[in-house]
Every structure is written in structure tokens, then in C-alpha cells.
Amino acid sequence: MRLRNAISLVLVLGVVGLGLPGCAPEEEAVYADSVWTNGVIYTADEADTMAEAVAVKDGVILFVGASADVEPYIGEETTVYDLDGGMLLPGMTDSHLHPPGTMYAELYNINLNGILTEDATMQAIEDYVAANPDMDVYYGDGFSIGAFSGEEVSKGPTKERLDAISDKPIIIGSYDGHVAWLNSAAFEYCGITKDTVPPEGGVIEKTADGELWGTLKELAWDLVPAQEYTDEQIKDAHVAFQEYMHSLGYVGITHMSSGITSVTTVDPFVEMDKNGELTLYITKNTVMDPNMDYLEQINNAKMIRDAYTSEFYKATSLKFFADGVVEGVTGYLLAPYTEEAGQAPDYVGSPLWKPDIMNQAFALGNKEGFQIHVHSIGDAATKQTLDAMEFSLDENGDGDYRNVITHLQLVDDADIPRFAEYGVIANLQPYWAFKEPYWWEVVDQPLLGTERAEKEYPMQSLIDAGALLVSSSDHSVTPFPNPFWAIEVGVTRNLNNAEFYEVDDITDMDDPTWLLDKEERVSLTDMVKSFTINAAFQNFREATTGSIEVGKNADFIMVDQNIFEIDPLDIDKTQVLETILKGKTVYTKP
Image: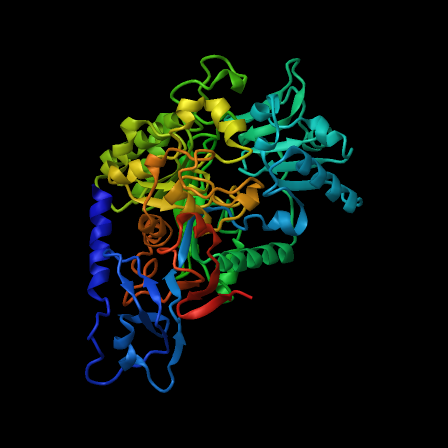
């Protein structure tokens, strides 16, 4: 229960400063720079307080309470915004995503993000190549394995599909970042043959007769030369990403991309921060490679942390991959995949870190003051990760580590109580917690089997066991990281946007077509908190953001409907009208 005690204390302290009715300024008047009044304001404080007004001075919240009681804070120079019954929510934090998201693909490459069918996928590639005949190498991103069928679900699409489009190299990443799809020219460009030995933890898919199939998985990605961009292209992509996140109501992110690899490789966000252009709170992860010495990597992470720390940018977390993904048949499971996976009958995948090395790396990382943040898809991977976190606690003793396990597609029932016991944060992507069209029936159900797939993403079970639930998008894996799409799925465990999936809409949240285990539904307040105060807590920023409370930064969003009064199936339709960071507007809906 270490984590629950820690967050409860933080929230109780925050509530002490809440501006309550009748608490007018004493002695010399203190006037606000701006006041929002006559609204419905969900504060996300410990008591789930609903307020009507908020006053802000110098970017900090001065008062929260009733509209009648905000009047003493209004002076001649105060700007007053009449919400006219509109809703304010705390600014959101996406606590696991990969900047700049889809922006490189959208601005410069073949963009397959959000394309769900085989025909549309192939047409988009063909159209891009035809429109850019002078390129020497074609890079792309965002293809979905769920768009294909048969053997191409477990192995990925074939190289022959791309060979038919161009005899120049084509290299396209999957939407989840775990599979690379190449044509024959691309394999030659990368120097990969059927005899190439992949790095440990990587897979080069082959045909039955040992020829190259067309895909690389996991650490075999290292065999592909990274695409190069100009400094101007990189800057433009990151600025566009920041603007996009603000349009969805985000004021903070947890940055999972490689970004900085040393103190001489500068993350574009650091330059934006130095230039006063950064308007997102960023918690940066340093990605740990299981094939490199962990001691050297942690020492490098310490130098990065010391070199780049500011109000907006902190590099305080280490990112580990415990396994791959189910769609790549690289997730690490306790029981074998089904026959549909095309593997040996006892095949369960494999861990990317040896258990003893993971134990030592976690223990050293925590000892050096880092949070451990782990990608874990399979139940076996999560068990190994929890074992390593237990080892770290035994070695280092209790501490405010706030270690995180993310994704959690499958969790063994016996491991669910261990999250609260070890103070481990459960970071899930609710966007995926329903029977997603073009995915459930193609990937999860056939590769895992119906009974096991029905237990995916046990969100309420984790809450019931005392774990802290945090939500994120894993963008660009989720191509459209709208938090209200995720909040709706968390509440309904059902279809969230029929138009996007091009299927018939539902009118009943119990409609069985796309419903995934309604026992795992989460309350609306818990879902909002998972994107606000809980996410801020994960990033060690709960003292300054994540809820609308006196003394915290004025970080909140104005939305076009009261999500607490509407049909839960309409939550995804919520639009952000304005995003405010430290009292200043950083986004206004056109």
C-alpha cells in the first residue's frame, strides 16, 4: 500500500488550500489577473469537488469555489470570463507516448496511421510513391497488421507486396513500432540477407524455405538505417506535435521516444525550452537496451538528467521493454499462443531481458533516483517485471520510486495485488480496451484464444486491488490520442467512434458487438483522474499540476459539454474549446 499512502497525503495537503465559500481576501485586497466564473468545474481533488469559479494570479490558482465568493478577487484590471454553464477540467497529461507522434509521417513520409484495411493500405503506399518519383528511399509509418489476413497476421505483410509498387527501397514501420516492413530493394539497402543473424531479441521473418519474408521484428529494427531529417524538419515536426497535443487538451506528456541518446545529442524539446517555446510539461525517458551494459547506460542517463532539467523538462525515468507484442507474436505469455500464431505448440514468446540482469538494472536505477517505466504486454513479462521491482525494493528499501508498468494487455490474477503491494503504477491505454474492429477478430482472438483475450486490460480489477490507474495513448500507436475517446472506452468498454472505424454505431453501452468484459468498467471520475492528477503523480508533478486547486499552476481546459451529465456513449464527441497553461491560453478552437 506504499503508493496509495503517498498519494493520499499529497492530495490531502492540496485540499487544505482550497478556496472555500466565504474565504475572501483579508487585509489588503489581492486581485486576480483572470477569473473564470459561472461554470461547472471538476477539480479532480481528493473529494471530487465541483466548483463554479476559479481565480488566477501570476499563473497560479488563487481561489476555487462558488461564483458568489470569487467577487472579492475581481479588480479593475482582472479579466473575467463568463463560462455561462460551460465546463472546465484539469489539463490532461498523456503519460506514455512517442513524440513527435505521427508528425514525421504526416509531413514527410508514407502515412498509414489510421488506415485499417488492406486495400486502403496498399493504395496509400502506391499513391505516395507515384507522387514522389524522385525519392531514392521511401520511408513510412503506421501500417496495421490487422489490415491483413492469414499468415500475414503472425508474420506481417510480405516483401512482394511492396516489390510490386517500386524497385526502390521501401521501409515502413508498423503503427506499434515493433515491426518493419521492407521490400527486396530495402533488404539489399540495409545489407540484410537470408543468412543475416538478427540481434538478440530480434526476429527476421523467413518463408518456409528460408527466404526473407518481408518483416523485421523487435530489436531487428537496429539493422535498418534511421531516416535522416534536417534540423528545420525536426523542429517543425515537434512544434506541430505540441500544437496538436494542446488541441486535444494536453498540458503534459511522458516522452518515451529515444530522443536524447547522450549529452551531445539534444532533444528538440530542450532547444524549444531554452527558446521559451516549450508549453508542455515533459518527463523524458531514457530507453534501455538489453544488449548493452546497463551500468554504462544508467551512468549516461544520469548525465542527461543533470544536463537537461528545468520547470518544463525533466529526464528522470528509464524505459525498459520486457517483451514485444501479441500482433508480432513476440509478447511473452504464461501459456502458449494458439495454433493460429504459426509457432511451435509450446511457444510462449520470450523476454527481452534476462531476469537476473533486469533485477540488477532496476535496483541500480532506483538507487540512482530514477523511476523505472516498463513496456509489458504478456502476463509472463509482467510477472518477471514485478519480480524485478520486488527485488529492487528488497535491495533499496522503501522509497518514492513510482515505478510504472505500461500496456498490461494480459495480467495473471495472482499478480494484480502486487501492484499496490510494491507501489507500482498501472499505466494502461484504454483506447484498446474493447473488441476493436479490424483487430479483435484478426489478432487478439485468434492468437490468444477467446477465453484469454476476453480478460485483456483488467482496469477495474487493478483499481479494486489498490493500484493507481494512469491512462495514456502510446501515440503514435494510437494514431488519434484524444483523451475523451479513451475516457469513453474506460467507462463503457465498448465502441467509441463508429465513424473512425467505419462500422455501425451503437446506442446501448451493453451492446455485445464490441463489448469487452463490462466488469472492468471504470467510473468517470477515475477515468478523468487517470489523465489528470494520477498522471501528474506518475510524473512527480502533482504538487503543481493535475488538479484545479489553490496554489497549483492554472492548467485547465474548457470543453463544449458537461461529460458528467451526458450519455457515456457521447463522451468521445467532446471538443476542447480552450487549453490554458499557467493561466495563459495555448490553444483556442478555431
